[in-house]
Image (cartoon, rainbow, N blue to C red; front, side, top):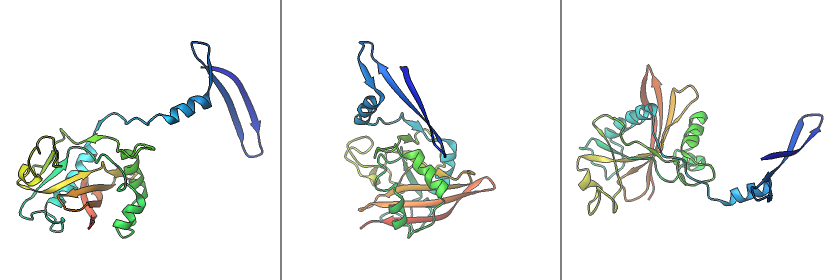
Length: 227
């Protein structure tokens, strides 16, 4: 890169520094920054590298999933006599339409969610200008025995080849596929947004947790089932 010109304009309220930069290729060709930017914009935005959820995520999700495991309101066809919850091995692959403030407001009856925690949830899970989630995994994390991490979705991959969820996890009440939590600025409040099943229709879970005396507890939660 070679800086070829800099021009300063002053106004009564601000000073604006405008810099024109020209990139010179090894073959002597000249390309403007605007041309480079247009070309970059035309390229697909790459996914970030895979990440593993952290200890704070584990603590929040464990508190929520243990509450879910014994929650009589967990949507049918969950079996209330079973107390194992399967946490899908990674966050959901897409953020739309469920990581959306208007959608969440509709599902929760316009519940007032902590803005800083919601903004953090979006920041951690969403790739800018991309409908795919930032890939974050829960595999290898140690949870309470009532929580099993694994592939929760029937399909052509192990362990589901030719089997249903109930056949693969006979002691499970259901599954949860959770985006990593969003935390308040003081780290004492968390929001979790998740898909849940098995269900004939899409179902979601939205929850608020508080950390009191070093322990996370669910203070509010809402199940939403689409028919």
